[in-house]
Length: 155
Image (cartoon, rainbow, N blue to C red; front, side, top):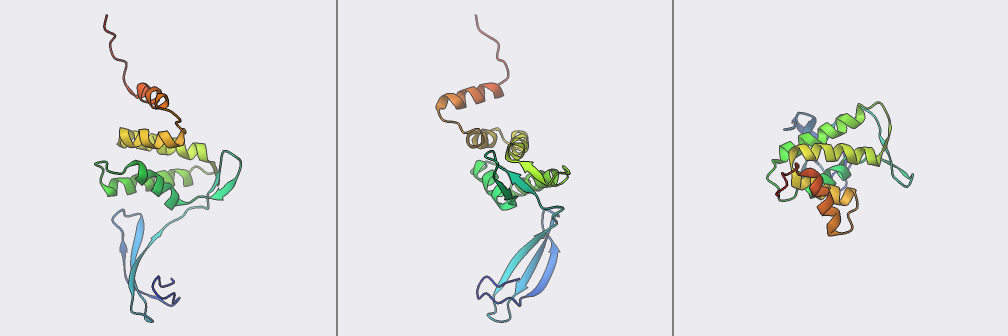
C-alpha cells in the first residue's frame, strides 16, 4: 500500500480488525520512510460490476460514487452513519448477488430509491429529484403527491 504522505510503496500493517460494519477490515499502517500513520479499509468484492448508462456508455461500478450520492441525499438528516453504511453495503451485496456483471444505471437507481424510501422520506425525495431529473416545482408536487396516502375529500 502506497503511503499517502510520501508515496513510499513499502508500508507496514501494525493492526488489523473488523470495521464497525463487520463487512470490511480496518488496517492501521505505518510508513518506515516518513513515519506517517494511516488507516485503510478492505472489502470483499464478489465480482467486477459494470454500469450501463442510459446513453449506452459502460463504466466500472464505483462504490464511492454510490456512497457520495446517497450521503448527499441524507445530509442533515437524523440518521446514524452506521445505518447509512449498512444500507450501502446491502445495496452493493444485492447488486453483486444478482448474477449479472452488467447492470443498468436505472436498475441501480431503483434499488437505491427503494432503500432510501424505507429509511427516510426526505432523503428519498432528494435522491429522486436528481435521479428523475426534476425540472420544475410541479415535478416535486406530483412526486410527493404519490407518496401521500389518499386523504379523505372534504365536501
